[in-house]
Every structure is written in C-alpha cells, then in structure tokens.
Amino acid sequence: MPPILTTIPITLFSLIMPLLHIEHLEDTVLNGNLSALELLENSSNLTAKIDGSPAIVWGTDPLDNMFFVGTKSVFNKVKIKINHSHEEIDTNHQGNVATILHKCFDNLPFLPGIYQGDFIGFGGNDHYTPNTITYYFDEVIDAEIIIAPHTYYEAKDDLRNAVVKPYQFDLRDTEYTKWVKPHVILSDDRETIINSCNFARQIATLCDFVDVKKATRIKKQLNKCIRNEIELDDLLLDALADDNNCDINVLRLWKLVESIKLEMFDYIDRFDDVDCYIGESMCDHEGYVISNEFGTYKVVNREVFSFFNFTMEKAW
Image (cartoon, rainbow, N blue to C red; front, side):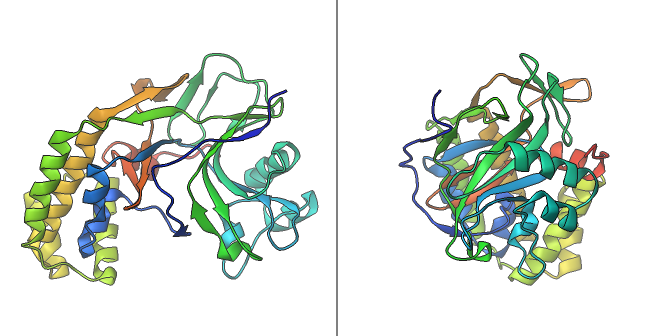
C-alpha cells in the first residue's frame, strides 16, 4: 500500500505567513498594497478552491501531541474548540457539524502537523452539493468521507500560534478517506496581464489610498452590492467614493485589478476528474488560491460565485 502522505517539492515560494483570512486579490489595493500586481506578473503556485463546507481542521495538537479534529474554531483566541475525543465533539458541537466531525475523527489519518480542508460529503454517491456547487465524480465514492485539503499549518505549543506554510503534500486516498485536489496550471506566458498591471501602477500614482478601517468598510459595501446583484458601474463607484469621502481613483483601481483578475482565468488549465455544476449549468471551480513570495490571495469570479454563496441555502 502506498504511503498516505508524500512530499511534493515546492520551489515557487518559501514564505511563512501568519494565520490570516485569505483576501480577494482586488480588495488588497484599497489601502495601497500593490503586491497583488507583483503576484499576477510572476510565476505562482495555483490551487483550485473547492466549494466544500464546513471547513475541517485536523492533525496533531502541538500542546499534547494528540490527534484532534475540529472546525476553524480550533484557532479561536478565547473559546477554543479542539476535539480529542467523541465526548469533546458532543460538548463543543451539535447538529450536522457534530455528525460530520464524529465521522472525521474516525476516518481522517493521524499525521504530523495541522491540516485544513473542506468537507465534501459522506461516501456512497457519485455527486455532492456541500455548499453552492454540485460536484460529479466519474464513479461512486466508496470511502467513508470526502475531503478537499488545501492548507497546512505548523505551531509551537499552541494552535493559536499556528502559521500557514506552503502546502507541499500529496495525500493518498485510503479506504476511509477520499481526497479531492484538482490539478490546475497557470500559464507563465501572460504578456497581456503584465501590460495591464503596468497600467494599474500608473493609475495607482494618482490614488490617495484609504486606511485599513475605511478599506474594511468599503469592502463590506462592495460585498453588499454583489450580494444584491447591483452592477458596480461608474455611477455606483462615484456614490461609494462620496459615501466614504475617498478618492474615486482608488475605486477605479479596484475595478481595474478586478478586471485583470478575471482576465487571468483565460490562462488557467484544469486537469481533474470532477465536473462542476450550479443547478443544471456546468461551471468552473469556485475559484483558485494563488501564492508566491508576494502573498496569497483568492481569485474568484465574485459576480457569479459570491452571489450564490451569499444567497443559496446551504444543505449542511
């Protein structure tokens, strides 16, 4: 039997970064952070963002070296919910989440380090709708659980000190766990992207950027527009600029970087055995996570997927 875990060499980046919410690429420019442009221009590691739910965290607790499972609440600063047993799962969780964690506790492998992935479903079917997208597989999945792993952490003494590290592992399927990790490639021949990034830098020289607090407020307003299918045209951007007393050029730059991001989808090739649907319409993966020495960001067609994520009822 092949080993469950093998190492994949990664030379694209060796950045160690603090545990953070991964931001949408275009949102980062609001307060003057232009690292997204550097990232788009250079060789990058790309992984598919599988639309599973809930997020599952598991591995070896650095405090006591015991196996644990949980949700992202294992990283809470105050009310930490780490589960080393079925009894702790019942104490910390309820309903469908508890049911999922019980199955994960019995079937996930005990590995060194800390892993995070999205729950796709229980075995016994050939299609699953864990969140917004329905995934169709080539055959019925016999494993007990299906997980899409995407993040690896290391921590000293306490999970609250966890840091994200480059994901460099190939988890092998077992009779208990099916791993879903589509293979995607971002072409290095992206001259039009580079030209667009250079133009964005010119726009940036005209911008009076906002501070982090105001950027957070603007991002919430942009998300509300997407949630309500409101087109982010020039008139709306002007209104947002007036409402936040900010330079309209900042929002124009945001819109430009968003368009560059959408253009990047033309340079992505997929190689996987999973078909994706929203309703009866075939679609791409929800999005991708792009990483190199300039950062780690989400690349999502928000007008499509963020709208459905905000509005569709979640089966889980």
